[in-house]
Structure formats: structure tokens, C-alpha cells
Image 1 (spheres, each protein chain N blue to C red):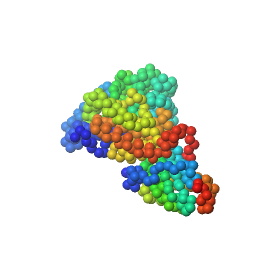
Image 2 (cartoon, rainbow over the protein chains, first blue to last red):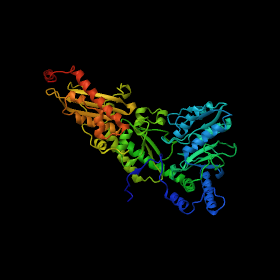
Image 3 (cartoon, rainbow over the protein chains, first blue to last red):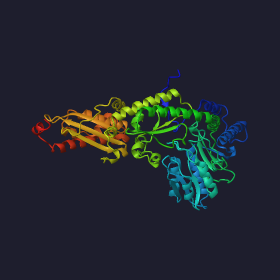
Image 4 (cartoon, helix red, strand yellow):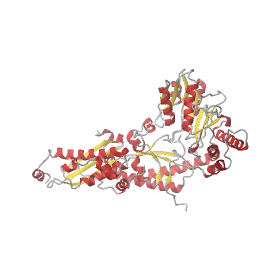
Length: 408
Length: 140
């Protein structure tokens, strides 16, 4: 039984995660039994819903080292990112109109910044190094007297690289600039502490930590300094006036339960994931040449492995390992037909971006699945290299960078 | 978007993967696309000098499943055709045969380009529309 795998195998935990059955169990009563509106102040249905919500606030806060009072619930990290960035921009625009972020942020941050640029804000998109890390000294150098916000993600979703939050937080504190982090991929996987890291705003979502889709949170600092935001959604003044709308109690309960579990399991799970990831990586590189790692070799999320397989294209590879769910940085897999902008930012080059596969290991990944996936990957890459004119040219000793391509 | 059965079939059972000797005067080679675009197709034809028909075709492709299937299908269709008939192969026929979705139509266009490039190469090596008699003296 330990050798069997259930197909299809899910190895795409950076895109989403399975809801932990314990989380689902915690949520169910709030659909069918305790279904009151948490804002109903005058009856027990409302009170019990409110109690569940307040408990969830504490569970979320505990995971990131904040008090429950500083947590507001949103529909997910996209909304949290929008609220943090637009909310600060609007509230502090008399103080300044400059925002600093990085070139490898999630689109929820980048597109929000682009909209603010259209509205007259100035945004600096800092470049990253070859491993995907932004340099704290570059952040410091970019800060002007018009800067009101720095937003740097805690860990990158594509290449898993962990950013130097504590160093950036210290710089922001020193210069009196608010510091926001999109910590979606990091919470519950690596240590995140808003006090130790000088974080003023933090976005997170449930569906990346084995919780339900449709619910996230925004941490908004209350002391040293007290952060204020202009709401982007009006209607009743819920969540201290920052996010109106009836609270999604069952989803909030799920987020809280997911955070509590993540807090408990983070260290042991992290060790297990490192070991499984090494098993996958070793098995692949033992049989295949010309395989490159994208992202930092050590300062990366424990479950993330992003590899480029030279001379073969990512979507064809995914078709070849069709019983395995992964992602690719190839243009063919994106709706926009552009290759991954994160891989471009770290200087991987378009050709290797098209050849990349992202494996996202998670809580439910087993050794048997790792072994199965490794075999499938090796078979697919060999099959595709047989069919690849690039591999053929490489074998003939031709330096592909000197070839003049016809293009189209 | 699930992959169509025909595209999967060409992936798992590709037709005519391989290479001819580029220097062979009876071989036409077309290489189109670029690695930065994520698509490179090398398509080769070998023409029978006596009949003027394409007697064999081979391909190698770096690209997605639809690109591989388009070029694989192209080699199937080329065999037995004359050079003129080969120039009539349209990308729209490839799209129809493989049930390619709109976002993959460009793969079929590249395959049509590869066919034309291979034929152009063959023709330039054989000075345009060469006669059968001329061919008979080459590579004897």
C-alpha cells in the first residue's frame, strides 16, 4: 500500500492547496448550525458567530506574531494587497506619492501599482538578483522624502526565494516609511513575525495553507506606528471601517483553523518537505543532464522546486507527465502567451523560461508520489529531447547562442 | 482546456522523428521559430529525383504539444506529395485535423512556414523547378 499512488498526483501547492480535512470539519457547523451573522448584536446566533470570528482572529494573529485585534478579514490576498496598497496611497497621499516594490511581486501587487501610476503615483520596481532576492541597500537608496510605502513579498510564488524582510523592515522603520509584505506563500511555511521583521501591513490567504478559497486577511499595525487605511469597499463600516461586508463566518473559521494547524506543524512539516524535495531533485539530476535550479539554492520555501530542463519546452513536458499536476514558466502555459516575468527578472533567459517546471510539494505529498513523479519527468524529458532540434544541435557541439534563428 | 486526443497521439506516437543529412542535395531543410519564442521546428523533406515526389519527411520540434503535433502531422501529409502539392498545405487544415484551440493556431502557422522553408531550401539547392533528367544525374 505504501507504494501505491492515487492519480492524478497534485504537486502544485504553490498555486493552491487541498483543504485539510480538519479544517473542513471545523467549518461545517458554521454552515448548518451556527449560521448567524457575526454583526447581529442582539441574539445568540450572532454572538456565537462573533465568538468564532474573534477566535479565528487570534489564531491568525498568533501565526504572524500579532494580536488578533490587528487582523481584518478579506476575500483573499488579492483583496488584501489592493486594500493595503490603495488604502495607504489614498490615506497618505498628502505626505507623498512614491511607492517602492519589486519586479517579481504577484500581479495583485503589480497591477495595483500600475493602477496607482495611472492615478498619478510614482512607483519604483526594484530589480532582483540572479536568485530573486531584492537588495535591502537598493531599497534604502530608492527611498525619497515622498515615499509612503515599501511593498516586498515574503517569498516568491514561482521560484520560492525568501526575501530579506527583517533587513528591509529595519530600513523602513529608520526612514519612517510603511512596510507591507505579501506573505501569501510564506505564512505557515517559514517563520514570519511582524514585530521582529518590522512589518506594518501583511497579506495572507487561506487557500495556500490548506484552508478554503475565498478568504484571506490583512494585518494592519495598531501601534508604533498606528497604520490607517482608506477603505476600498464601503457599506456598514465592518472591520474597524476598513472593510465593509458581512463576515464569511465559516470561511473565517476555516482560515483560523488552517493557521493554527500551520503554526503547530510548520517546523516538522518543513523538515519533511526539505527531505522530499531533495529526494525529487536528486532522483531527477541522477538521470538527466542540463537541469538548472531557478531561485535561491537554500533560502527558498521548503516545498518549492523550480527547474529548467534545457532543450525541452514546459507545456510539452506537462503533457508528457499528464498524471501529475505542476506549473510551468513557459509562455505556452500562460493566458497572455508571455513567458514568466519572474524568470525573466532573474535573468534566466526566455529559452530556459519556456523550459521550466515548478514542483510545489505540500502537506499531503508522499515519498511514493515523489518517486513516481521523478520517473515520469525523466521519461518525458528523454522522450522530448529525442524530438528536440535544440538537443540535437547541442549534441553536435553547436553553441545555440551563436545561431541566427528565423523567428516568426 | 484538456489536450485533444489527436495531439496526445502525436506526442506519444510521433511520426517521423529524426534527421536527414542536410548536405544531401535531395534533402530540403526548413528551420523556423526561435528558442526565445518557445517554438523551434526543423522539418526536412527528401525528394525522389525520378518522380519529383517527396518520398520521406522528418521533423524535430522544441515546443508545446500542439507544436509537436502540427509538425508531426505535416511530415505525414508531405509524404507522397509533389513539391507543388506540398506548398498547398494550409495551416487551417492542420488546425481542423488536430482540433487546435484559437490560442494554439500559431503552432499550425509555424508548421506551414516550416514546410515552405524546407521546400525553398530544396529548390535553391536544385535551382528552382529542375527537370527530372537533371535530377537523375545528381548524386548518382
